[in-house]
Image 1 (cartoon, helix red, strand yellow):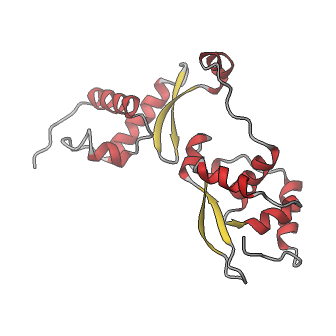
Image 2 (cartoon, rainbow, N blue to C red):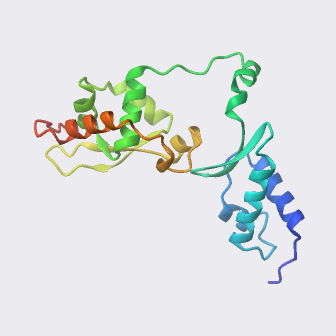
Amino acid sequence: MSHSPISDQQLTQLIEASIFVAGKPVTIEMLKSSVLEEFNVSKKRIKQCLDEITLHYSDRGICLVNVASGYRFESHASLAPWLGKLWPDKAPKYSRALLETLSLIAYRQPITRGEIEQVRGVTVSSQIMKQLQDRQWIDIVGHKEVPGRPALYATTKQFLDYFSLAGLEQLPPLPQLQESKIDQLLRDPSVSELSK
């Protein structure tokens, strides 16, 4: 199969337009196998175009970001107070318990419900776990090899995408004191894993 040539300008335009109209994050592989399949374009060249697009939008109202599922355009976070007026409905408010549970899963995954309860010092309601799973922010990734084989929870790509993260390494670091306390609580031999 012969491949058509494409200039850098055309390639950049095509990649930019593809990400703009896709309606979901787009990976380099998706670009290569769809809109760029008739062109002989290396992943390196596509990445260079993505870097140019990122730079081009760096001082604009929108920016190109790389999240777990690929590249997408977003408005700059600094514009949120004004852009929020376009949607009169308020974003859902999440309880402290839900946010603490999600944080523990994000920072200590895979983790069991019993371990989350040990760190928080209270029972995690089934409703919280269901809400996190319904939003597709967490998923069961296995079972711990202890009596009762409790489920192990971890975050998903949808979690990373929602919070505009390419990977867990982009989570802000926990304060050292908090991290030490969590480690200490998780090492506590009195933690008993129950089947949840």
